[in-house]
Image 1 (cartoon, rainbow, N blue to C red):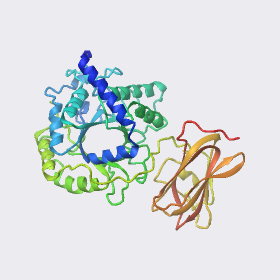
Image 2: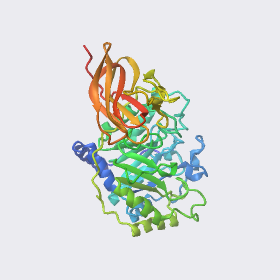
Image 3: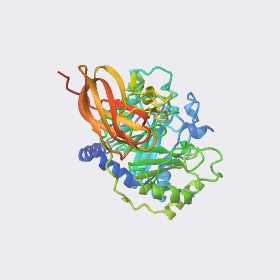
Image 4: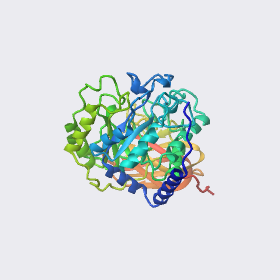
Length: 475
């Protein structure tokens, strides 16, 4: 079994200095600045490497023996050189995929690279190589963890959350500055782990406490509307899952990712497979997406020796010949702050004015943006309300329309001491997602009255949130 080696005094001092400088700079940056810096990176290389590399499936047996992992020629500097040849400014590595195998030296589990024939910290070797090349690092981390039984239908205990937090702490304290941590398998169709099963607000705040400059992304683009940042500092699009950014309408800082090869992890046919057309990737993805505030991440999977195949290397070099990364290109519009709190309205008792046919009021708080409550055209001033626990703290209500924005004025009201009190008004038709933030208050129920709109009123979701930890009590 591999063991950790003690740090030399010089190396320890360098880490301390890096940490000090990082903390000092982090305090001066707003979220918008960090989003702009992310968009300015423009292009990066994704690396999926681990147990699935040695299997013919990307989702491996969660109890597969870690001894199969044996890359005899592992060279992370070759990965970095390959990325740099394409004009990439960073590498995003999958540090833990869905089967729970860890690519770093972790104290949380034996299911890691340290308990394999390799016995080396792959992540440390990569981050050192990136630092030498003046490039940044991002982490891809799956909340879904089938080996450690963190999955849908199993009990979500405090111990499981503590396990995840311990891994995040190792990742964000042992490998220098991390640009972004990208979560996967969380509140997604393929993971089915909700933001209450594993608390998003808790992990979001924890990450910011460890590295304030670290952006948080979740691959939840299959669920949430593209007009707002739901549970993500950067809007995410996984093209392989059918998600595609609209370069014409996007106004948010964004990320799109795609594999150069046919799957994310290396397979035996890869050395001779026809790869994605890099001319098309440059012309139809990198160039227009960069103009639309989106950084593009292309996956090149290392093989079982731990090297990127010659055909993939040449494809990345060709990208570098076709396209040059000149850094800053567009100024990112300042977006509303991300929605990071738990939606208190989901599946609670609700009511509304008359609905159209079977599109009833409960479709507006079923946590499904594909369904909608539709108001009867006969109602002149429709309303929708949801019952909360007594004196529930609230600080934001988000109303998402289905289709094009039609609402030009709405009022949000709180039921307090038996009376409805107006707490927010929205009179904008810039987006179908109406984010109403207001001074923290308490409510027994929330009601939305729709004062002015065109056509058929159709509401996909109404979310009620408390984003502030402390609020005053009503008299």
